[in-house]
Each structure stands twice: as C-alpha cells, then as structure tokens.
Image (cartoon, rainbow, N blue to C red; front, side, top):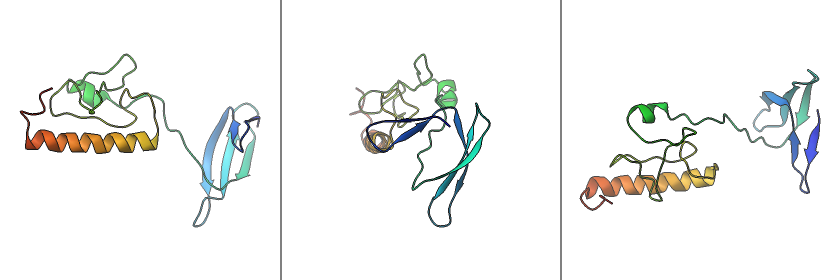
Length: 127
C-alpha cells in the first residue's frame, strides 16, 4: 500500500478501502484492502476518520421544492435559510464550502435558532 506522508504524522493511503475497524473498548486496528495489489493488511491505529460519500443526499429536499446547486447541494444563506420560508438546512448537504463536523454543528445551532425565531415571530423573518 503506497502512502503519502506530509510534514505531520498523517499518512494518506491511496487506492485503499477500509474493510473493518477492530478494537475492544477503543479502536486499535484497521483492516485495509489495497485495490491495486489486492493485498489485505491490518494497520495499528489510535483512531479513524472516515469520509462517507461525496454526493449530497438532497433528493427529498429537491422534490419538496428546495433549491439546490448544480452539484445537488442545498442552497442556503448565512442564516441557514433555503428558498422556502421556514425551511432551513445545515451540514454537509448544504452549499457551505467547508464539510467539517465543527461547521456542521455551528450551522445546526444557527438553523435551530433561526427556526425557533421563525416560529415565534414569522413576520420578523421575512427577509
């Protein structure tokens, strides 16, 4: 398995598929499959970050009339509002440029506060 190593202690494994995560109470091994060599290898680890998918799961929103961009991400403004009044979106399904847990949490908080404000005073949230 070919790995790219940067200046930090991070390895990027190319053409590699995660097959299994092992450990008792904590993660301690990853079972990896190299798609080019067909080699299976156990790698000792202290943690795993998994990226799942690249396409936004926005079909239900699109079918409801929520605007999405050309890549399928839900269009939002800075207050997490969509084109439909009272409908908010947050996280990786939005067109926000950063797909990180921290930004998704912040977006969720903003969306929740905005939705609450919309319910309490809908006339105030028209723009």
